[in-house]
Image 1 (spheres, rainbow, N blue to C red):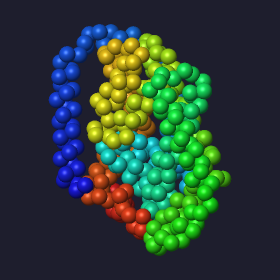
Image 2: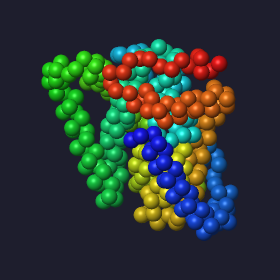
Image 3: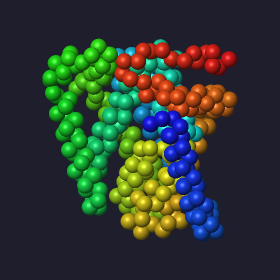
Image 4: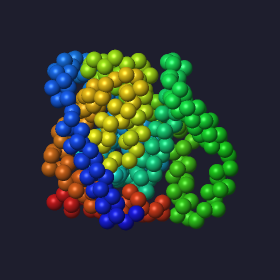
Length: 336
């Protein structure tokens, strides 16, 4: 899709959301919601905030372990890049945050650009496998509603398919027939995805989902929303499905709507669902932005956002073909 068309679609979607938001805001019960917000258990909410930060740590650690066989980076380097990328994800749309993560380890750790981008793709796959395992394990512990039982079946099938693909020994013959550029990319992928390499990153991905689930459950309790564990699970699922494509910065508005959709089957009123979505997004976004500003400064964060937005608008390196070289724009020059 051309950048101009993509930008026009983004504006059209944003305008539609804005119109819908104005209509909702006019009819929204502000007085009742404000009273519910003042009644929030802020001590429990602080616990939820601290728990949620561990999700970021688990994600960065899993990424570092995936990179270790092909381009070792330090634990702190992976955490710094994850924090920066997540902060820009909250401030932008599209793949800007992922591009910033890749550029961070290219700049500070000397990781080749192709390796950095491939590692993020693999991390996404690992997070998907971790989610499948998480769903299956949760289903063993709690009674899921019928709609989520379908998700459980799909998750179980995904785990089996992933295990079969991992144990298949014919990949070497297939990759040997590929053109040199694609073969290099396949070799990078094979270095990260091995039976010996994957268990630790997958375990951290499962931990990441458990932490998210705990964050949602604690936030709902702090805002006096009484839902069973299955309700928190439904909200996690709805929010992550809605977050697959970010149409607004941080998916503001879409995130709140997804929480409402996830909680409605459990009898949670509309205004309570929106309140939970607002509070959840606040404890997820504000600490990350605060840490990113403390690390880079507000000016540095804005500059990095401009650079990544420019790259995304010009179909830059994150969308480069597998055979792309490790060339990266001169960040030192950009900073001056």
